[in-house]
Image (cartoon, rainbow, N blue to C red; front, side, top):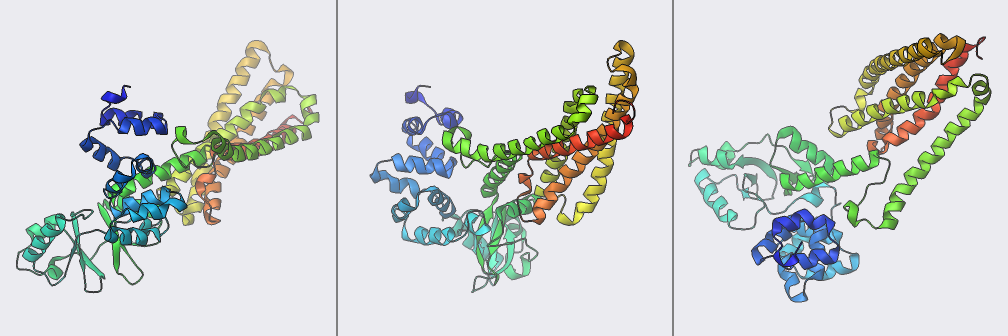
Length: 437
């Protein structure tokens, strides 16, 4: 891509593939209007990169483009030693607002909110409110889709949408026509819970209040879109058996990448060593009936796959609040029935395949039918067990206060591998005793 002819759209598409130096160089070729729009559209970490590489004379103009909540996000990406310098670039009112926001945890409602919102007094008439709202719209408020009604001590009393304002009689007081059945969030509400409020109530903005009911700011839907993407990305990475990456894939250093993946991989490796231990325990059975070893990969992979399916479904259901901790027994019963049905299907497939091969080629010797029955019953047991483990583990982790996404598919598969061997050889001992064993 020729940097001298780069457009904003082209730079957006190529941005994640470019090195930091190439990003800054390409950004410098945008027109002033395109550069401003581009700057406001990229992630806080990328905004910080642009500001760092800009001449000192124009850093102030870049950071002052940001709303207080966006400026707070950028400062959270900065190193502690450079935050004071960046704060000094803000105008005094914005600096006070950003300092307030930085006092909250990054993933709480207080850390996401914007302190600039449209507000009305309850004793205004509707006509006065419309005029006052028009004046606020000329200022840097986050959104005017909703106007929040506050008393003299900033307690949240109600809310009115633009539509409600324009359709209400002009001489009525705001207190008489405002809605009081509004959805709000506490300052320390987790960002994942906030995203669920937006989804459940189809909102554009959610007001944030302190314990006394005083309004502190609003979280808007554009803020929460980034949160949803971040939460989903972290869950997917954890479910894949890795720590969550704190930057886009190509921007993560190699040492950091290895460190984030090595821990889980080492734990899974140690878990798989238990599989070798279990096979050693059944060494005599394998020596007597070597044909049993042929089906070990089939048995343990089926259990691991069923467990991975179940844990993925339950983790997602917990994340979307489709199920809660109190629903564990309902989930257990459903997964018991599902695991039994899935195990029966796989068992029937395994039984049919072995019987056909036995009749066609005599592959499994004189006891082919018993081997087929052993594999079928083992598949029922292993798939049922894998399904129950996979569906129960996220509930256990949530109950202990951990992220259910930590119940990664590889972890469940490793756990089921070990227990699957025990189930397989226990079933084989019962069915084949006196024949092959």
